[in-house]
Image 1 (spheres, one colour):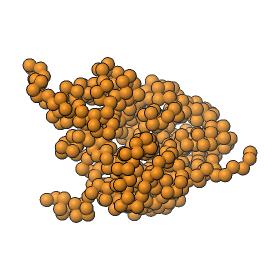
Image 2 (cartoon, rainbow over the protein chains, first blue to last red):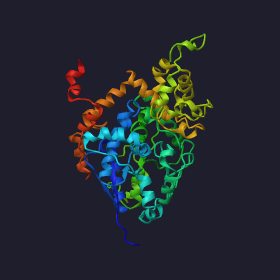
Image 3 (cartoon, rainbow over the protein chains, first blue to last red):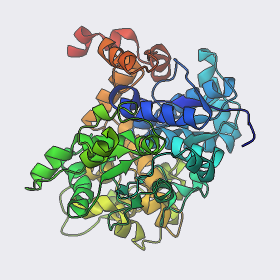
Image 4 (cartoon, chains in turn red, green):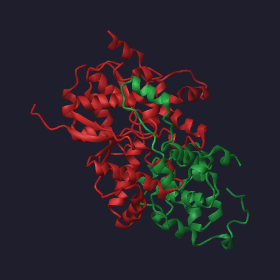
Length: 297
Length: 173
């Protein structure tokens, strides 16, 4: 293999990942390093602005533009682990790049902070970034531990795929395949199941917890009777619903079962030969015991 | 929603300018293109689980000019921003964006869900929704992850919230 200059990107952690999804962050950093990607950090990144969009879109846009302007200073693409961060930052860049007037308004607000957004900052979700910048064939070459015999249920969620006018043809929101292709590349089976494309309900958690739980419950019930090693996520907020709230959701359904939940980057890390400890599996609350046992041998 | 009117909608109670006000909000532009096919409602996962939530109904009420009924409807805050409706709409109404525009109007006239206050307070205090305290950074250090700092000042500037407003004593008054 010919040596290539390392790919560089700025890692945008957002609010949830650096506090409650350390296993996601740790495994993503390990996978990135194994793929020859240099992940930069900016200590002054904060919230992406998305949580404010519903009540104050103008200020939410300034907050997102702040992160875009910071990334622009470093002349690096932005990579996010949270699908909502990736979505809102990409949407804001898309809007501002096509709206000189809106850009001027936002830049007037950024000026007192010593920042200016100059268009063209590329924002992607981590998984999309490695698929496009490294490619599945190269990723596959790093796999040393085949995961044959295990079956994983991919969860795409909403903002990873939609709106398609912002994400521009990365995957088909009606018939997504990107996560299944990665899972299958590890030698494992990827489950196709009726609630594959369901929303986790996380977006309405702050308004109506019971309603959010009913939404997440559909997928958990769907997986209850299937032979599945784990549900595989690419968003920390989907994790809040499917892992964090799982016990209470299932209890409210008057059922008794548990679905292990992992992040896609943990799955990739295992296939690359990292140990479960290296990938933060200690923090997974509902562990895929059979899978981890096979790595303890 | 407001109490049912057995005589139906009185046109005098409608505000014909409301739809234009929504359309003038960023993201609200598509509302007038709706031809009521209900593809959005059919694809909405929330409509399936929340009685009374119906994207097409919110659009129709807005187009009719039922201003107060729409702005004060608890259902306005039910959409989870999953974009399923937006992908399926044949008229590019972009309901996810339209509902954001309507929510922004509601918020500006003081009708926001309780979670809104918490979001604003957290962003002004921490620049994030989750506080990064010493305990959080200790855990990060143990796992070999770079430490994270809070930078709340730029967020206060953007939101126009001063330190005084965040003082618990003045917040309790």
